[in-house]
Image (cartoon, rainbow, N blue to C red):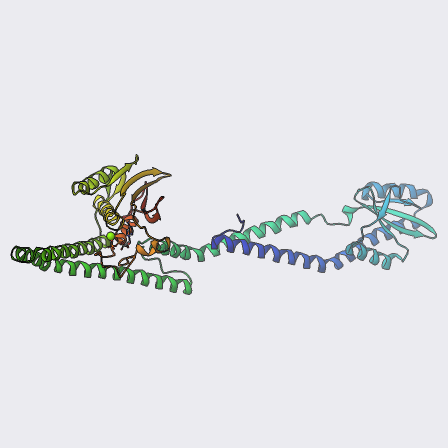
Amino acid sequence: MTLFPRSLLWRTVLLLALLLVAGNLAWLQIFRVTEREPRASQIAQQITSVVNLTRSALITANPEKRLDLLRDLSQQEGIQVYLNAPNEPVAPLPDMPFARLITAELQRRLGDDTTLLGASDGTRTVWVSFKIDDEKYWVRLPRERIERQEQLRWIGWGVLVLLLSVAGAFLIVARINRPLRELARAAAAIGGGRIPPPVRESGPAEIRMLSRAFNQMTSDLKRIDEDRALLLAGVSHDLRTPLARIRLGVEMLGGNTDTTLTDGMVQDIEDIDAVINQFLDFARITGEQSAASELDLNELVNSVVERYQRQGKSIATRLGSVPQLQMKALAIQRLLTNLLDNALHHGGTGVEVETAAADGRVRLSVLDRGAGIPATEAERMLQPFTRLNEARTTSGSGLGLAIVDRIAKMHGGNVSLLARDGGGLEARVEFPVATVKN
Ligand SMILES: Nc1ncnc2c1ncn2[C@@H]1O[C@H](COP(=O)(O)OP(=O)(O)O)[C@@H](O)[C@H]1O
Ligand SMILES: [Mg+2]
């Protein structure tokens, strides 16, 4: 699992947030570096004035008043002055550019032998040395006197600005992303065999262009589909009547010629008729408008299978308990007969129908013990007019599985052609329990 988000929206927002953080950190650093020198000199100046004032007060005060003066300084200003050495453990300030700058500036202003030390026990104080005549004095300053205490608030504001920027970035990206998401959904619908309603043509020019092209494509697809259905329906319908006449003629001929010849011809006519039926079915599916209703799938399977059994076909059933489904009964019946026709025609033996429900899906499988369909060809066989062995002379339209596929998708389901355990084909149709389209 990766933490990097998959959607364009979150990816872009994350990258923008990283960019903003990096940019702000860079600015912060630039600011700190450029601000260092003026701030150091400001602090050095403050220390210098404290030291100078203390020193001149000490020099000019009456010797007997000095003690009072020192007490006053300590009480009112928090400044303590000691002779010779600090009265607490001290250590040099950490060797950082900022401390170095202050020390250098202090030495420039107060003399080269000025030392700057910090309390080594973590107390926030600094010690500065100065001289009166040859005596060395130390001033103890609380750090608050010379340092600004704003850094935490600073960080707070920075974080707030950053959050606002990320929120702004989110809004901008979401705006761009919305039409893209809509397009992706529509494209997925086409992939699932449905024609989605047109997407909105809005947003920036490139995306508008994309949406327009996409809408053009879907409407073309829809028109091609409808044209094909219309053509198929028209041609099939027109072929039927003459075909029926031919069949009648051939059967009447049968009386006074070789019956094997006429029987063959009748068989051929029946095959042609079956193909025409497929054409009509296919055309009907494309324009299918009938309403779905509650359906007991097992009941439907039983009635279809019984019809086959009456014709002497051997089909076994293994029906599990399945919930009632919202389905178009006629279409599902057509789906099942197409799969059974295939199993009997291409498979031959061991034909079984199985139903089961699991994980919110209902499964309908038609199985046989024929040669099966190679996995590499399975997807292609679902396309209209495709057959495994095009050169084979057996009759068929190549539309059966395409019809099955369309009916399954119409119900939000999908078809897979699998290798059956122990040889043969399993044509598996899976429906979601709760959904049906249209
Ligand atoms: N049960 C099956 N066993 C083996 N091959 C099959 C089976 N069902 C379908 N096929 C292959 O898939 C092709 C497409 O099937 P279909 O779309 O029903 O067209 P048709 O049955 O009219 O040829 C068939 O021509 C056949 O080669
Ligand atoms: Mg078929």
